[in-house]
Length: 173
Image (cartoon, rainbow, N blue to C red):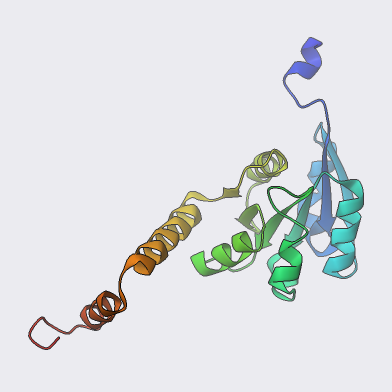
């Protein structure tokens, strides 16, 4: 491998950006190793364009994904799919992050994230990694672990836990 190419991927990272998010991406066109395509239309049309360029990272707004059927969308994207999705969020929260990750999205970031972070996130997502800020990952993991633990409890144990959480003492329970 020649020295000038050894530090970057040989294959460029293909990125399709939903037109509403394009303003944040103008500098991306100058990054070595990225092929940027802008797309407008319905989220289905944008996804179809990304699929035609696959493998590719699709960058979409949170608002666009909230309009979709989660089950139908998740069949087209994800770790095993050729389209990996990065959601740029205007509102953040573990419930939203968990929702988008469960739909098959590979990244969840605030829409005002620095360009350097955005670039690292796109590269990581293109290579199959999940990308979100640490606090979001921590909150999602805590919720997943708690949900898993709750599933292992009996119905009576969950009832008692609910009563404790509501503030009742042992005697009242």
